[in-house]
Length: 373
Image (cartoon, rainbow, N blue to C red):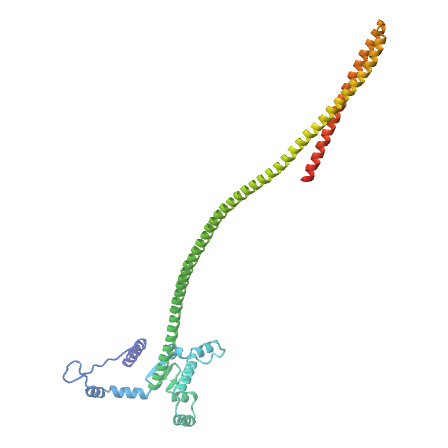
């Protein structure tokens, strides 16, 4: 391999290593001529940057396209600025358009909305487009107005476009960060709200429980006091009822006793009047009986005397005849027996009549008592 080939190979390897990393160049500057700390002389620093060619390098870099990204890195870095367009493109059927072109169009639209180019710049862009007859992609002229160019493998950015895109990216990231923070704060707030609601519900449930417990206690006390009052009133009313009952029973007993005694006195009077009537009627009956008896006896004696006188006359006539005497004696005996039998029958009849009169008197007395009642 020749020296030129080796140099080219080493340069290629160096370039690959540089592309794989993010190199930063550090240049030391002397802040002041006295070499004392915390003293910064701007004129000396500017003279050193001018003499070292840093300012010229920065100016040259700004004139061209200092920021260069591959399509993949550009999409990876700035896809946040065109997510809706990239999603729509991924779902679409036109696969010829690259995602990088879609993203660049979305970014250009956003830059145009924020800082549209002037009319002079647009006229110059139209003139260049008309003068360049070999232009295959007129879109590059439109992109150049905004400081962008899209190559086959890379995207070129001017300093102004890079700063604008970075500002858009930072703003979008800030907006998304705010959305994330909003969602996170919402989640935290919702969680805290849920905890607060749960705690509030718990406190409310405890408060309601305590309130309900106090209310139940009051109701229980009222119910117990009502039951105690009911039992006390029942006891007092029952006691008063028993006293009234005993008093009424005593009064009823006394009244019934008085009524019974009055009735007994009336019945006793009736009984005594009946007895008096009985004895009076018995006395009257007995007097009638005795009078009748005496009358019967008198009549019998008179009749017997009359018959005896007649018999005596006959006896005197027939005294001399013994046989006649014996016959007369037998006749007298028979007559005496007949008279005794008649006397006994008369007595029985008198007694029966007296009993009938007494019974009739009793019935009359009972009927009179019944009429009085």
